[in-house]
Length: 335
Image (cartoon, rainbow, N blue to C red; front, side, top):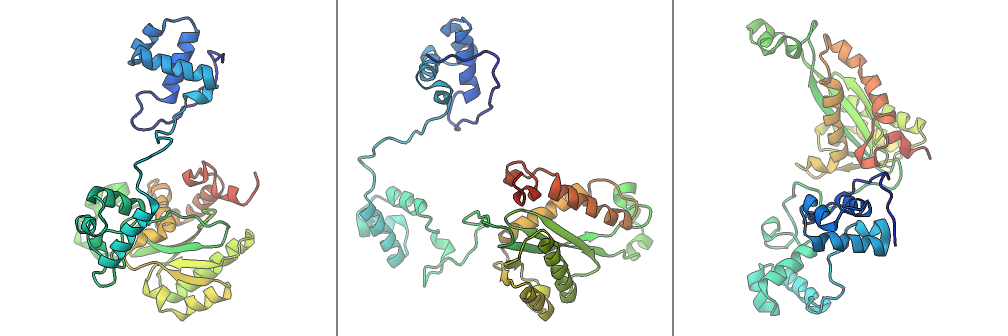
């Protein structure tokens, strides 16, 4: 029989959405019963039946702490599961006829609800997202079908520009309130904008940013060249550069030349699908929250001077959820 010390380090595990108790609550049941409390009293305190409490105690006795975790609810065998050849007939009929489940049901002899599950399970797009003549998808979804991460540093980098309003001397409306910009004189000042150019490595999430006065082709090309040198200093060779379809990337010969000098290829996202460049788009949001609008700056130069410190903290200290709570630089070093 397994024993569970009363003062062990508890792990807050996540249970499936239909579970009455979390793994931590199941562990509490075992701890309290082992301490001598009656099962009925423990079950009542936890809001479950005695049978439920006995089930978790028995599982703990059989398998130890691992027995308190969730098990798959999938049956060991499914005698009524749709056969693979039937699924293939459904998919072939959908490609040929390009019609909905009700009409496909007459073609293949399978209930419409089963056809719906087969189509969803195989990732078949909905009819209104497809071209009626060819059956190929023509409408982009708001989520990328496959969430990806490149296998090695430099295999793909994301490039984008974030436009930020400049801060007037003495501070802007965040320091003095929105009423400061209501007068005609203030509106005619035309302080202008800063253009924050950023490059983010897909695998490591290491970021490099610069502030410029515009986003013209020559400016973008010079930034990509310096960013490539920054990543080269970290031992990262850039293979692909992904951008949106802004004219400075698509029409500029300078951008094409500098990408070629890096030995990389230029990849563009699908028009009107910014989420395909999502890693740098998400970094732009982090720029705003943790740098540009993190505090009240009294001048534009003060905000610009704070960017290098933010980038160092982002790359070397800030925990990244997608990296298991480690900073981006950890992807380059074994520790």
